[in-house]
Image (cartoon, rainbow, N blue to C red; front, side):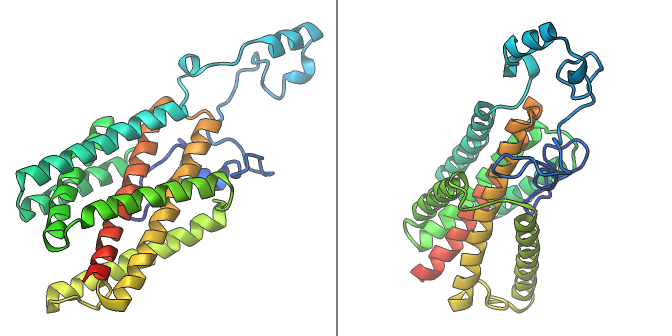
Length: 292
């Protein structure tokens, strides 16, 4: 499935190019008519679990089938929640360590923005690959962390303590979205995804236009990052980041439920890292406006 993040159109779990949110089971876990498992593969006629063969099974075969132990992750190589947690811990840990190194070393702002460009390139390369590349994902986390360390120090020099406030805010958004998703207050379906992607594309385009006007005319461009209008767009950015997280949770849930290959847990970690970085940067800007 394709990305829920408008910055990097990362490829997700479906090998056939389908979007898991569109062609997978709904959030509640009940299949919709006409929609199937995006990870389903053609099964051999001898497979007793194949739908076409179950009618021809003898009572002894049925008893053997239902008495057999379930296939575990080590046997099938399927993605588990533990895999996702471990890979996400690795990517986020790399981001945090790199950010701390950049902060302590007081890297120049130019180096930080150079690291951001490298991280963007690595993220785009991973987005267009059909398979997960741990080296690319960890490289993205490393350079993104260097950028975050530099930009956080810049904000901290002007508004003391603001990076920690943004970190706490990011954690609060993550927990809030996770609780809302688990309690079904947020239901990620095809309509939700289309709306979020359309809103995100419009948001990114407006920010690009604002940056262009700021580069040409100086100042704040069209004012989307300052004053009352900046607060509105900052809140919209945080809400979009929360929506990205909900879509990431849906992708992970589908991957575990449908037995995605274990290496796909790297893509899940990549998606979560992208969304959390997005939220953190938006909170940095938003809090700075309030503090200003």
